[in-house]
Amino acid sequence: MALHSAIKGKLISVIGDEDTCVGFLLGGVGEINKNRHPNFMVVDKNTAVSELEDCFKRFLKRDDIDIILINQNCAELIRHVIDAHTSPVPAVLEIPSKDHPYDASKDSILRRARGMFNPEDLVR
Amino acid sequence: MSTRNSEKEAAGQLLDNLYLDMFHLVEEHTQCRVNLEQSNASGAILLARTRFQHGGSHCVSTAQIPTENSAEFNALCRVVDSTDGISIERQKVDKSKGFVEPLHWFSVLPPMSLRNAVSKFKDCIELVAESTNLQRQLGEALDWITNLRRSAVLN
Amino acid sequence: MLKSTIVDARVRLVPSKKLLDFLDAQKEHFQQVPENVAKIMKQNGHTLPIRIKIIKDAGLVHKRPKIDYDLLKKLTENLPDTPKESAKDQPESEPEAEVKDSNDEESPKQVKYFLYLNDLHWLSNTLAELRRQDHCQVFLHQLIESCDLLLPENEMKPRNPELEARCQRLRAEQHNRDYLKMTKNVDAGLKHYPEDTISYQIKSLNKQIIAVVQFIFSVAAGFTFGFFGVNLMVGPLPFGFRILLGVIVALIIALAEMYFLAKKLHEYDEVLDAPKRKPQPTTPTKRKVVSTPPADGSQVQTLKPHAD
Image (tube, rainbow over all chains, first blue to last red; front, top):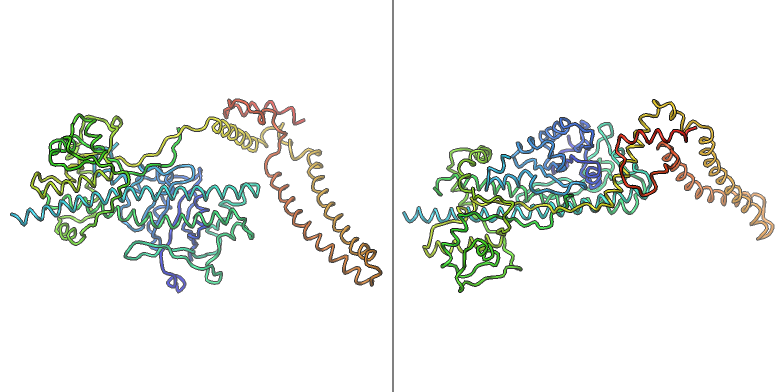
């Protein structure tokens, strides 16, 4: 515990495809804590949606995580969970991956902004 | 009556400003994500080049990433929350304290392209912090707008 | 069509009828109008008085407005419900109230004109001016609430057909390889195909043996040079020194050679991992891609004769 209290600041966690995870881990965001829980998850085409959802919820519960990065194509799979999460901490960022460019019309917060204007469009 | 009017004027002006602020934030938010996408893509290309030069796709892959069974280690960069948004703080590599260099998972002598990829992804992390700040501000602005719209002063 | 990155990150707002009508009604009081707004009004059949200056706002950049958070807190503090609840149920409760407003009878797909951020800044300033002169008591938010916010959209780009063809060819090849790997121990003809034939083994053995022999030969040559060559060149040397010299030269060469050897053997391993096949006659040529996954099976059939 002494080790952890000595380090200030929170973690960034990553849920994404291989390249995204490898990249951000190279950048130095990765951590495996005392209980052997990593703060990243590699999603490939065999990953089940329920697995993804569980992992996301686990990250939401951890209090040492401040930012959750999630690939937008993964976010699409668990959209209902992301939409349900409205508190600012931890912040959920939908990041583009190399084969899925960023799509503003899918981003949760931008859709909320859009809902201010013509809410009937949200229903569709 | 005049105080009520002036209050209404102020509230209306405030809501207008909030809306304008929201538009600004949406634009900046999008721009930030586009930048993030660009530096992420160039990092991915450098990773791919590393793989190509080393022949075989398993030289940089998830197989080298530590899993639940490997030893614990600490994150090199962390998020520090302060009043004016969050920022990224980096630690020095120090094996004894559990800060390991992630480059060494992949090879002992990392090639140039992998090093360049790392610098690209470090840029990405900075952009992530910026983007988080914008997203938070945007969320706050949206909350304020909804609150203010139902407030009694305007009706 | 393929999605590509967002080029234009600007926010766009589709003006509603209410907004246009308002602009038309108040046009006498405007001093100047941005170019974009003028264009929109013209397209909707509203004419502007000639005296109005049209400003070109190409280089104009507006700063984010300052928000008086103290006032904001004061205004919202006596709200009956908690902000969290309001944030949640707001989107659901709104639709009934606003559907009437925003029904403009024109679908957003047909709309070709948008308001940009600069126009909104202008509108906000103008409205503040109008309110001060008591021409009207309209706020920006009342006007734009009925508008449609368009988020920045991705540009759609058609995929290069050449690239598409190549990708499909590569994908088919990979599927084919996967299929072969999977069916290897089912298909009797393939069972012993690549690795178990003697010729294949001898061939791969040969390559490695050559590499090793090369290594030994060059080390021996290095030693010989150190032991005899230097002696011949410089003159008679003591025996112990000659051996030392030979070993040193041999070691240097061995080190260098070891590096290449390790690299080469590593490559062999990699090649052995992938199921080996004679180059398929169909793949290298730039044929039209027609092979679909079911066709893979038939390709295997045609290749069987090679196995014997």
